[in-house]
Length: 512
Image 1 (tube, rainbow, N blue to C red):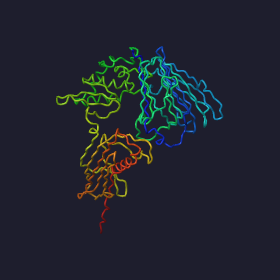
Image 2: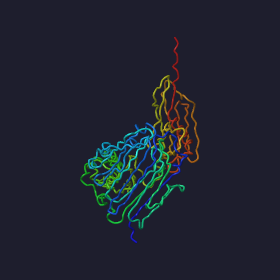
Image 3: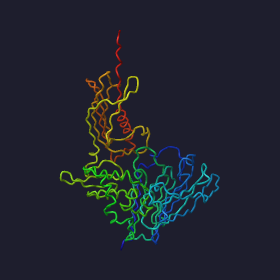
Image 4: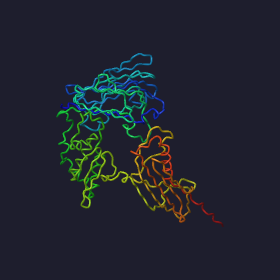
């Protein structure tokens, strides 16, 4: 039987979401309910519904957060019709205050202010009224959208607790549909069998983490991913493949010339960097433009675009410069000839990190080895003391221990590294200077994390010898809460030994 629809749901709930890892800070508000509904209609449209019921507990929820006292709804009048079904506030005494008509304001979203071709998109601001302690804001709206393609990733987490979170999906013909649910350790939001094609409910969700160096949200929290794509030609969304693959042509001729470099790798890196630096990013959900990707020439001439637009522009410019290139997710693979051989390099399209030889182990790319003799370049700090911070190499680990709290329930996202430094630091000859502290000798390993070695001493000739080695190797670059204490100590030892302090010998008194 011909497959009529394809639906893929993925609900992923990780162990870090569990109650023992929840933060204990005071709650400013709590959601009694969040409900998201998706209904595919037989006429080629889709209704997207959203309902929230949130109780405000503290003054900060009223004055400090725009998403509590106000609600911002993105929509595109060219393909969307927005209807406010309900909007009111239930006061503490039980009375209900309707949101007045002048509290609904349409404005241009900030993401679109510098991109003329997206100036038709709107943001409906709902200014909630009658706010007070223990009041409940209720908002329910529907977006009726032309087009049935759907690709939604819903993170079931907010910056305050959620008592009940629902996701509902319905389509007119589920025959031949593909439906899967995946979870971690067998834990997923509960699926409800109540006549809807898909209905899941998650209850008592803790508020999300606010720590530094967090993994991506889809690692920390439960996620529902809904993809709906009907079969047939009507299912093709966005700009056609031929337009995206076409050469960018004369529009880029002058730019290619300006960015040219005799080193091919530098040349393609210049192109990537130009797009990142000079093409403004309009970062809104692609659903607002019916998942369309602009032709590269349009993105270049308008000097703005979505992240997807910019990826295709980078690819087109590199090809226009004469290189063979292919696009992958958030990166471009470029073929460059070196010594008569074709070498593939991977360029990130989201940041300006150096190109990486395709197929080389990532850990090899993150290995840093330095052996240098350098002159003292410290600053006087008074009373005959001076301090110098050791050089920082590009690509070295960047974790600030002051942002690692003493108690933490969330995992830490890091970049694994293998760094080895050996510096011989030459001190000025006069007056005589010595290390202000005893020689440093730190060396230990932590199972599942890595190892650290630091040796700082003054040599007989007066120079300071510094050996610093750090190896971090945790699976997927994630430090678990159980590993956190040992990791934090390692980062503290690494940072504190990066600064050297010396003292000058007191000047000799000259007698008469």
